[in-house]
Length: 222
Picture 1 (cartoon, rainbow, N blue to C red):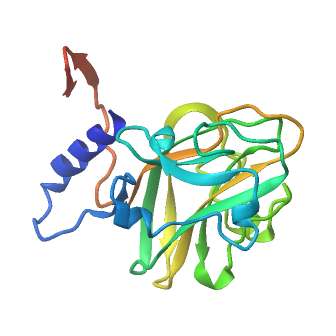
Picture 2 (picture 1 turned 90 degrees about the vertical axis):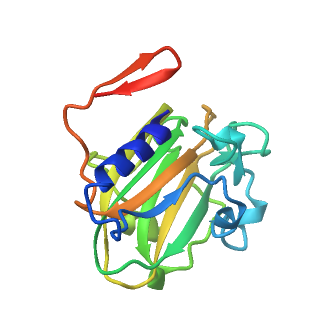
Picture 3 (picture 1 turned 60 degrees about the vertical axis):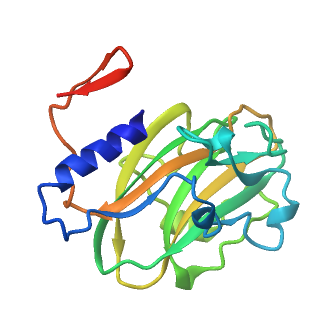
Protein backbone atom coordinates (compact mmCIF):
# COMPACT_ATOMS: atom_id res chain seq x y z
CA UNK A 1 0.00 0.00 0.00
CA UNK A 2 2.83 2.38 0.80
CA UNK A 3 4.30 1.88 -2.69
CA UNK A 4 0.96 2.58 -4.40
CA UNK A 5 0.40 5.69 -2.30
CA UNK A 6 3.89 6.93 -3.13
CA UNK A 7 3.26 6.62 -6.85
CA UNK A 8 -0.10 8.40 -6.51
CA UNK A 9 1.46 11.27 -4.58
CA UNK A 10 4.39 11.68 -6.97
CA UNK A 11 2.03 11.67 -9.94
CA UNK A 12 -0.34 14.17 -8.37
CA UNK A 13 2.36 16.54 -7.13
CA UNK A 14 4.45 16.16 -10.26
CA UNK A 15 1.54 17.10 -12.49
CA UNK A 16 1.89 20.66 -11.21
CA UNK A 17 5.28 20.84 -12.94
CA UNK A 18 5.84 21.02 -16.67
CA UNK A 19 5.02 17.74 -18.35
CA UNK A 20 8.56 17.82 -19.76
CA UNK A 21 10.05 17.72 -16.25
CA UNK A 22 11.17 14.34 -14.94
CA UNK A 23 10.28 14.10 -11.25
CA UNK A 24 11.28 10.53 -10.50
CA UNK A 25 14.98 10.01 -11.27
CA UNK A 26 15.12 6.33 -10.30
CA UNK A 27 12.39 3.97 -9.09
CA UNK A 28 12.85 0.26 -8.46
CA UNK A 29 10.46 -2.36 -7.10
CA UNK A 30 12.59 -5.24 -8.46
CA UNK A 31 9.70 -6.55 -10.59
CA UNK A 32 11.63 -5.96 -13.84
CA UNK A 33 14.19 -8.68 -14.61
CA UNK A 34 16.41 -6.26 -16.56
CA UNK A 35 16.61 -3.99 -13.55
CA UNK A 36 17.37 -6.89 -11.22
CA UNK A 37 20.30 -7.74 -13.49
CA UNK A 38 21.78 -4.30 -12.81
CA UNK A 39 22.28 -5.15 -9.14
CA UNK A 40 25.49 -6.88 -8.07
CA UNK A 41 24.75 -9.31 -5.23
CA UNK A 42 27.23 -10.96 -2.87
CA UNK A 43 30.02 -9.00 -4.46
CA UNK A 44 33.64 -10.08 -4.21
CA UNK A 45 35.38 -13.44 -4.52
CA UNK A 46 34.14 -14.62 -1.10
CA UNK A 47 30.55 -13.47 -1.55
CA UNK A 48 29.18 -16.65 -3.19
CA UNK A 49 30.82 -18.70 -0.42
CA UNK A 50 29.24 -16.80 2.49
CA UNK A 51 26.73 -18.70 4.63
CA UNK A 52 24.18 -15.87 4.18
CA UNK A 53 23.64 -14.16 0.83
CA UNK A 54 21.44 -11.63 -0.95
CA UNK A 55 18.58 -13.04 -3.05
CA UNK A 56 15.65 -11.74 -5.13
CA UNK A 57 12.15 -13.02 -4.41
CA UNK A 58 8.80 -12.73 -2.70
CA UNK A 59 10.35 -12.91 0.78
CA UNK A 60 11.96 -9.51 0.20
CA UNK A 61 8.86 -7.89 -1.26
CA UNK A 62 6.67 -5.25 0.35
CA UNK A 63 4.17 -5.47 -2.52
CA UNK A 64 4.61 -7.45 -5.72
CA UNK A 65 6.57 -10.63 -6.35
CA UNK A 66 10.16 -9.47 -5.94
CA UNK A 67 12.32 -7.75 -3.39
CA UNK A 68 15.93 -7.95 -2.22
CA UNK A 69 16.57 -10.05 0.90
CA UNK A 70 19.26 -11.87 2.86
CA UNK A 71 18.86 -15.57 3.57
CA UNK A 72 20.89 -18.66 4.42
CA UNK A 73 19.08 -20.73 1.78
CA UNK A 74 17.02 -18.41 -0.43
CA UNK A 75 13.76 -19.91 0.86
CA UNK A 76 13.41 -18.10 4.22
CA UNK A 77 14.24 -14.84 5.97
CA UNK A 78 16.46 -16.76 8.39
CA UNK A 79 20.24 -16.56 8.53
CA UNK A 80 23.15 -18.41 10.10
CA UNK A 81 25.24 -17.15 13.01
CA UNK A 82 28.36 -17.01 10.89
CA UNK A 83 30.50 -13.89 11.00
CA UNK A 84 30.22 -12.16 7.64
CA UNK A 85 29.40 -9.01 5.70
CA UNK A 86 27.54 -9.42 2.39
CA UNK A 87 26.99 -6.62 -0.09
CA UNK A 88 24.41 -5.81 -2.77
CA UNK A 89 24.89 -2.67 -4.86
CA UNK A 90 24.07 -0.85 -8.09
CA UNK A 91 26.03 1.81 -9.94
CA UNK A 92 24.48 5.24 -10.65
CA UNK A 93 25.66 8.40 -12.36
CA UNK A 94 23.49 11.44 -11.62
CA UNK A 95 23.95 15.09 -12.54
CA UNK A 96 25.66 17.11 -9.85
CA UNK A 97 23.22 18.03 -7.11
CA UNK A 98 21.28 16.91 -4.04
CA UNK A 99 18.88 13.96 -4.21
CA UNK A 100 16.48 12.25 -1.85
CA UNK A 101 16.78 8.49 -1.34
CA UNK A 102 13.93 6.46 0.17
CA UNK A 103 13.15 2.76 0.37
CA UNK A 104 11.16 0.17 2.31
CA UNK A 105 13.12 -2.07 4.66
CA UNK A 106 13.15 -4.40 7.62
CA UNK A 107 16.10 -6.04 9.36
CA UNK A 108 16.32 -7.72 12.71
CA UNK A 109 19.39 -9.35 14.21
CA UNK A 110 21.02 -10.37 17.45
CA UNK A 111 22.60 -7.98 19.98
CA UNK A 112 24.57 -5.00 18.69
CA UNK A 113 26.36 -6.80 15.86
CA UNK A 114 23.72 -7.88 13.34
CA UNK A 115 22.12 -5.22 11.21
CA UNK A 116 21.67 -3.41 7.91
CA UNK A 117 23.90 -0.60 6.64
CA UNK A 118 23.35 1.62 3.60
CA UNK A 119 26.12 3.44 1.75
CA UNK A 120 26.28 6.05 -1.00
CA UNK A 121 29.85 5.65 -2.08
CA UNK A 122 32.04 6.97 -4.93
CA UNK A 123 32.95 4.25 -7.41
CA UNK A 124 36.59 5.23 -6.93
CA UNK A 125 36.43 3.72 -3.41
CA UNK A 126 35.54 0.25 -4.70
CA UNK A 127 35.64 -2.70 -4.89
CA UNK A 128 32.78 -3.43 -2.50
CA UNK A 129 33.66 -6.95 -1.44
CA UNK A 130 31.75 -9.33 0.80
CA UNK A 131 33.93 -10.88 3.51
CA UNK A 132 34.05 -13.71 6.05
CA UNK A 133 34.14 -11.45 9.11
CA UNK A 134 31.63 -9.42 11.06
CA UNK A 135 34.12 -6.53 11.34
CA UNK A 136 32.80 -3.65 9.27
CA UNK A 137 35.05 -2.67 6.39
CA UNK A 138 36.43 0.86 6.45
CA UNK A 139 34.48 1.95 3.36
CA UNK A 140 31.22 1.16 5.18
CA UNK A 141 32.10 3.36 8.15
CA UNK A 142 33.23 6.21 5.88
CA UNK A 143 30.18 6.25 3.63
CA UNK A 144 27.24 4.93 5.66
CA UNK A 145 24.07 7.02 5.74
CA UNK A 146 22.59 7.84 9.14
CA UNK A 147 19.03 8.74 8.09
CA UNK A 148 18.78 11.24 10.94
CA UNK A 149 19.59 8.58 13.53
CA UNK A 150 22.37 8.31 16.10
CA UNK A 151 23.62 5.07 14.57
CA UNK A 152 24.41 4.05 11.01
CA UNK A 153 23.09 0.56 11.85
CA UNK A 154 19.45 0.02 10.82
CA UNK A 155 17.48 -2.37 12.96
CA UNK A 156 13.69 -2.90 12.95
CA UNK A 157 11.68 -6.11 12.65
CA UNK A 158 8.67 -4.80 10.69
CA UNK A 159 8.39 -3.10 7.30
CA UNK A 160 8.95 0.66 7.38
CA UNK A 161 10.08 3.46 5.09
CA UNK A 162 13.16 5.60 5.56
CA UNK A 163 14.68 8.50 3.64
CA UNK A 164 17.80 10.66 3.56
CA UNK A 165 19.53 13.08 1.23
CA UNK A 166 22.48 12.04 -0.93
CA UNK A 167 24.78 14.24 -2.99
CA UNK A 168 26.18 13.59 -6.44
CA UNK A 169 29.24 15.31 -7.86
CA UNK A 170 28.44 14.01 -11.34
CA UNK A 171 30.75 10.98 -11.07
CA UNK A 172 29.71 7.30 -10.77
CA UNK A 173 28.55 6.20 -7.32
CA UNK A 174 27.31 2.98 -5.76
CA UNK A 175 24.16 2.60 -3.72
CA UNK A 176 25.08 -0.32 -1.47
CA UNK A 177 23.07 -2.37 1.02
CA UNK A 178 25.25 -4.23 3.52
CA UNK A 179 24.10 -7.03 5.85
CA UNK A 180 26.45 -7.69 8.72
CA UNK A 181 26.06 -10.48 11.30
CA UNK A 182 28.13 -12.10 14.02
CA UNK A 183 28.38 -15.56 15.52
CA UNK A 184 26.44 -15.22 18.79
CA UNK A 185 22.89 -16.18 17.78
CA UNK A 186 20.19 -15.39 15.23
CA UNK A 187 17.05 -13.26 15.37
CA UNK A 188 15.26 -13.24 12.00
CA UNK A 189 14.30 -11.65 9.73
CA UNK A 190 17.53 -10.75 8.02
CA UNK A 191 17.56 -7.63 5.82
CA UNK A 192 14.80 -7.02 3.25
CA UNK A 193 14.75 -4.11 0.77
CA UNK A 194 12.03 -2.96 -1.65
CA UNK A 195 10.57 0.09 -3.44
CA UNK A 196 13.66 2.25 -3.85
CA UNK A 197 13.09 5.83 -4.97
CA UNK A 198 15.72 8.47 -5.80
CA UNK A 199 14.66 11.93 -6.98
CA UNK A 200 16.02 15.45 -7.12
CA UNK A 201 15.79 17.05 -3.72
CA UNK A 202 12.94 19.56 -3.50
CA UNK A 203 11.32 18.58 -6.79
CA UNK A 204 8.52 16.59 -5.17
CA UNK A 205 8.31 17.71 -1.55
CA UNK A 206 6.60 15.49 0.98
CA UNK A 207 3.01 16.61 1.56
CA UNK A 208 1.94 17.91 4.96
CA UNK A 209 -1.40 17.35 6.65
CA UNK A 210 -2.02 14.22 4.58
CA UNK A 211 -4.67 11.84 5.89
CA UNK A 212 -5.06 8.27 4.63
CA UNK A 213 -8.19 6.32 5.54
CA UNK A 214 -9.43 2.91 4.39
CA UNK A 215 -12.88 2.74 2.81
CA UNK A 216 -13.99 -0.76 1.83
CA UNK A 217 -11.35 -1.87 -0.68
CA UNK A 218 -10.15 1.67 -1.37
CA UNK A 219 -7.83 4.16 0.29
CA UNK A 220 -9.03 7.76 0.66
CA UNK A 221 -6.38 10.47 0.63
CA UNK A 222 -7.25 13.98 1.81
